[in-house]
Length: 157
Image (cartoon, rainbow, N blue to C red; front, side, top):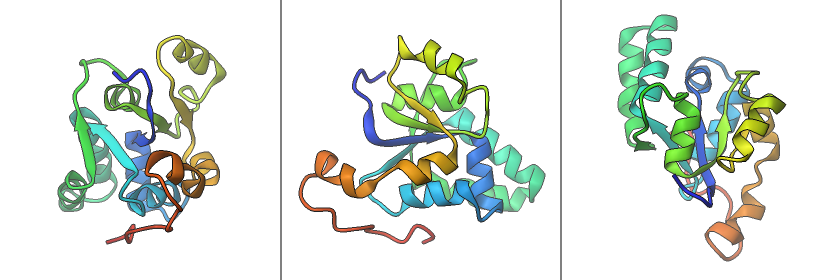
């Protein structure tokens, strides 16, 4: 668990990962920001990826879910966490991510924020809020150094 989370590391809940596959909306916009920058890291655990794959299979097909799993394997930093932990929060904590993206209102609540405040420094927000607030141009000089060159890869490739 990182005491100083990486402001360029993000964990996304299974609902966000699945929404990215099916809906051209806030989840896709948020994850496109992550995918468009090679210096921004998506962290996940095997249980988190398993959950997302199951949702994708239920909403689409087993073949789509298997293709998604193969594709994301090259784009995610996989971490381990204790069984029973909430997958996105645990992945963020174990992967040193400063951000958790979720559609779960309970995870985004003030009560959860207060409970987490004493344990880990992480920002839990909706994909919409993340896409609106995450500013690669202002973060780049801090994380990488130098002038922000803009996105450095195609988020859909």
